[in-house]
Image (cartoon, rainbow, N blue to C red; front, top):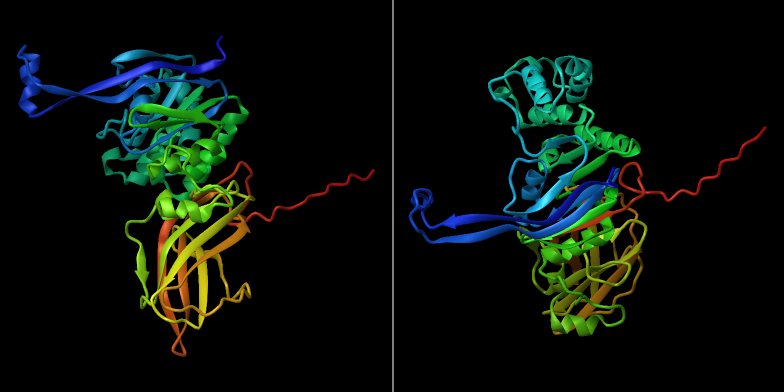
Length: 420
């Protein structure tokens, strides 16, 4: 038996793009038409070892879902080959393999039969499936009446409880509530302990960083890179801002880099950022630097990182205050600080002055997705004034392979003493 559960070699998938729908029919009938080749995948190769949890990440349209459909046999490749050793259970998209007119129970048996199980084998697994899905009496109703949440709960319960050797999951988990997702990831961990193989696509970079042993990064149908989760997540964040070469600032030379390109362009910026202020001072640039001094929105838990902002003044300000806040995706302020709290004296500023402010600290937050807020306030003509605030200006991803409970890691030092 091979050490690899999945082997993908030179995989290419080409779709033809027609100028009008009738051209497709004309080509089938033997007429010559002008059609453009679109490469959904181009010469992609990678291997998945038995027992690995492997993530596939990339921007929309990079070929992630296409490659999963080829691996599971839903699509045929134009060129290349895929070798799979082991029974696959796949959750690719809502509704895949389900008959909308059948009840939940009927679909459990339908899917189980399609995967090669006998009625007796499905009977033995039925209770586990129902308990995992936890949708009550809805399981006896037609699935066309289900909410998207109930649908994915049942679909995932079937996929994960039929004893697969290889579990393949697309983005379908994103519609489940937080408790159901926690249950799914606990099942992932059980699978890993049992030596099962998991392959999944996700935009949740914190989950990729926490659960994956190996990550494949796709970009525009090609494999850009593969390697450790932390390395690939950081590279992916650079792809999001069209920075695929190492052009980031290096420690000790921030001003030189700032002159070449605004540092904020290296981050994943929020197009709907909320900003306000009287404009006496403006935050003209900002960035986040990881523990290696690189501009990055991906920070490793426990490592040092920096938040930098550059402020330009259009008026005289006697006591400037600079601040940053980190919020969760629900809008709750998790942590933050400012120069006043830190008791950092800031000299009065005159019109035309500029200051660069850098906050340096260690990242204590648990793995997850967060938002960064920046602010410049102070006293203007004797009154406390908001000069410029940027709410949810960019996203931050915290990654780790060390788990903790809640928002923060206490980085505990534990001593266990045995006494006879």
